[in-house]
Image (tube, rainbow, N blue to C red; front, side, top):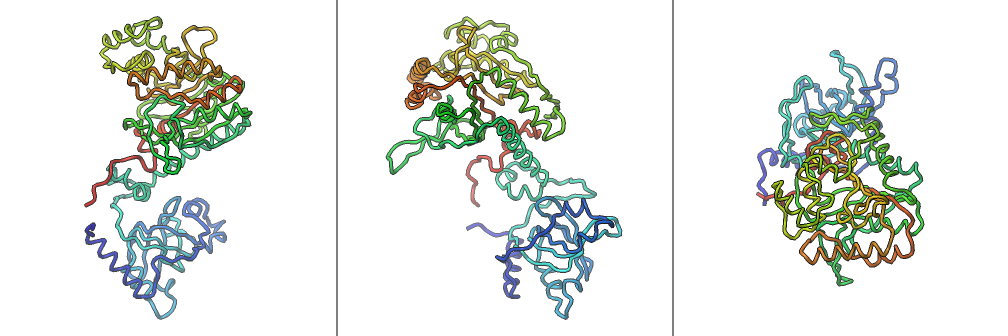
Amino acid sequence: MTQLSEQEIIRREKLQELHNLGIDPYPAAEYPVNDTSVNIKTNYSEETKEQFQQVCLAGRIMSVRDMGKAAFAVIQDSVGRIQVYIRRDDICPGEDKTLYDVVFKKLLDISDFIGIKGYAFITKTGETSVHATEITILAKSLRPLPVVKAKEGEVFDEVTDPEFKYRQRYADLVINPEVKEVFIKRTKIMQTIRDFYNNLGYLEVETPILQPIPGGATARPFITHHNALDMPLYLRIANELYLKRLIVGGFEGVYEFAKDFRNEGMDRTHNPEFTVMEMYAAYKDYEWMMRTTESLLEKIALTLHGTTTVQVGDKTIDFKAPFRRVSMYESILEHTGIDISTMEEAQLREVCKQLGIHVDPKLGKAKLIDEIFGEKCEGNYIQPTFITDYPVEMSPLTKKHRSKPGLVERFELMVNGKEIANAYSELNDPIDQRERFEEQVKLMERGDDEAMYIDYDFLRALEYGMPPTSGIGIGIDRLTMLMTNQPSIQDVLFFPQMKPEQQK
């Protein structure tokens, strides 16, 4: 059993004393909150004070300054903090002063939840506060929060330990309130995307997370087992093939915010569970998708910051459209001095060796090109740049280029040295698609555990006919990192994946 600290033992003793006084430390009844700290501090004035004569707030006690028969406390609600003035004779108007002398002064602790009823006023020092006429215990905290010291608005002992921040996000959000802003902005990003596509007339949909075939991307899946059907199932690595089925079914545009899962490495830009927004539009191509994506990201930057420029570390990134466009072969030539456009697998292996890139002998031509680009090119694209026109071997779900043999109509959007979006003119020729799947099977037989399976039902859907279509996937986690200036994916996930905690 976990051994309790001295403070935890004391708090449990206080809990029992509250019970002994007949006070429920965890009441079930609704508490009639009618205002917030921010609203009062923003809008209270001599002209508006009549509107703030009966306020009701609730939140955590964050500090107390005892002055004998009165005290100042700071409470933190869902949007901010406000000072509360508590005087013994106001909350205990009768003979019995137990609520103030015993409950408030001795049995309440920092981080306990209380409710306050009273009226707003401005103190002699000019601070907008609430004069309490009634206090109610709403929840007793049995574990003390880490102490964060602050003076005159400046935090000088902030809790920054990643182990604490990511494993105990609930406490991190309390003691580091600015963390909450990152997640508020994440929600605004997603809402902006929704509004953007809804205004185009596209429909938000849901597709299966448990799939019989891990399709739509090249990645290593998580595998589980369905007992009733006695069959393996895979956590989806992408929702692409299901969304394109809906285009076959007659929808002109569909999109989904999807939780995807890939059983691969973890680092500052990868988490095994991540969020992707995928959108597919009939009668469009990748050129239209580039223009649309520029407009979308410009709109997101303006919504969050009021400008198209975003500070990311020591870099200023401008999302003002249009973005630069560079073909993949041009990019490799620019950054390595080598033209690989006519090379076969053996030659590409020699290039990797020449460039000092270690590659697995199981990798085929597509993965070799991907390794060269990832090692030598990707990190150079700080400002938003579309990398276009990929080799056909790298893109088994993409339409062949209409004018450039051996290439496909695909782009990836690079920002700050990382891929943010991936998009195609979608392959809608069922015969070509079958052949591409069969090539993937050959790679799987060579040992490539990220190669695609053949999805026969998807091929059947294509045989019914899919109109010309363009699709895109945007990584919401990485986009949030960019738009909120966060260095790690763990900083934009409420609960990032971590190793099991060692129980003491």
